[in-house]
Image (cartoon, rainbow, N blue to C red):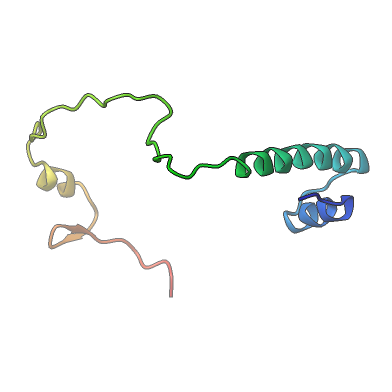
Length: 95
């Protein structure tokens, strides 16, 4: 896929980015390179290759899932301007 200079200017306009002719030309070169790399990557046959969660085969060190802090909701809500049923009440901002 290749872009034209007019398409780069259109995208910049839609993104509300002011771009000079030199910047548009430079951006066109960068985007063309990115699209070429994407096309090259899509050309690789990946049939039979299992997806990986990470580029390196690492294991996450996990800790025991247990409660380490006490419930302090009542103390936190005691300083709130308004609460009801364990929830914080806030002013309505959308009508």
